[in-house]
Image (cartoon, rainbow, N blue to C red; front, side):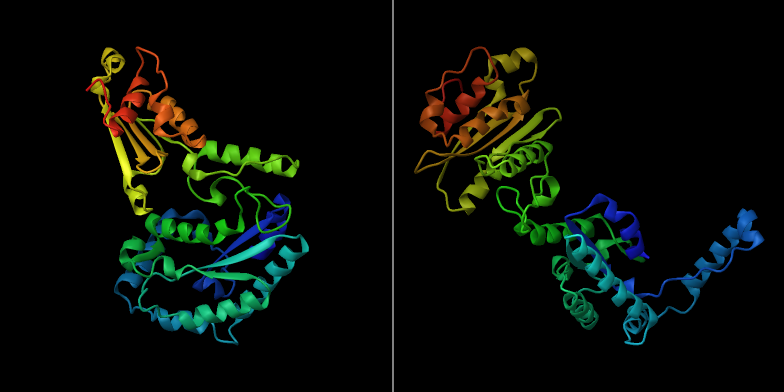
Amino acid sequence: MELEQFKEIGLRFKPDMVILMYFINDAEPIPTYPRESWLDLHSAAWIVLNYRIDSLIRTFGPRPDWKHYYRNLYDDNATGWQQTQKAIAGFAETSRSMGAKLVVFHLPELRELKPYPFHDVTAKVKKVVEANGLRFVDLLPTVEGMDPASLWVTVPDPHPNGKADTAFTDGMLRELTPMLDELCRTGEPGVYAIGDLTGPPWLAHKASHEGVLCVEAIAGMHVHPMDILNIPGCTYCRPQVASVGLTEAAAKQKGHEVKVGRFPFIGNGKAIAMGEPEGMIKTVFDARTGELLGAHMAGPEVTEMIQGYTIAKTMETTEAELMETVFPHPTISEAMHESVLDAYGRVIHI
């Protein structure tokens, strides 16, 4: 069914890469539905009654052995498993014929994770996938250390919730991102990727700049690599929040000895005049080289000012150039200058 939909609809988009999500119940046979009766078509009460009866059976009736049920789906003679193997082969053939790369991601069953009861089933699916020349990625490691119930939509419903989806997405990106280089080229010649597929930060201005890099690379121009540490992040709330580069903790974790400067907006005349004295600016420098490692701001119009620090980071500016820069008065940007001065014990207006 999915293969036919892919051929009918998916191929219209001429994809360069196809992601196929596989779950253990994908080996169920294609269902057939009985013809709807007159009551099914014309009586809402009949529909509700059937739903109630079904709910009572599920609640008070014998509980099925779900492990036995799933394992039986993968019997070599099972109709659904035979159909699934043909579908995987069909996806592989169709993708190859159009020059698209296909990756199969396996979603684990979430009732039990450690120990996981279906390693044998996963291995069987992987063998079929790889026999068709496709890449198989098991996403079980992304969640096996978590409490299974915390990943369910509701306690009795072991379908993945937002927490599970986030873990799966992170795992997928870790696999897909290495297929891209710093100029947005994928592992396939002539195929480029931008935006969410290339990994965090998931920001519109990053994706837009990646688009420029792609076009420049395709046109044969000299292309500058993208450094994600030089991409500013902004939160449009009140007070506004903006940052670029490493936090103090991340810089220390990477082995930097740091100098840190802080300046509160209550010490800035323009911020007081605007009636927005809340917030502060924090700067992080490498103590040995003076390199600006990161800047973090919360306060008035910081989403506009963060670009100053972003330019400084891109140009590999040190504290010396920033301290010697003249900032206009009266402006809230003067707080940027004071934060730099504070990192080196030279703050003035505090």
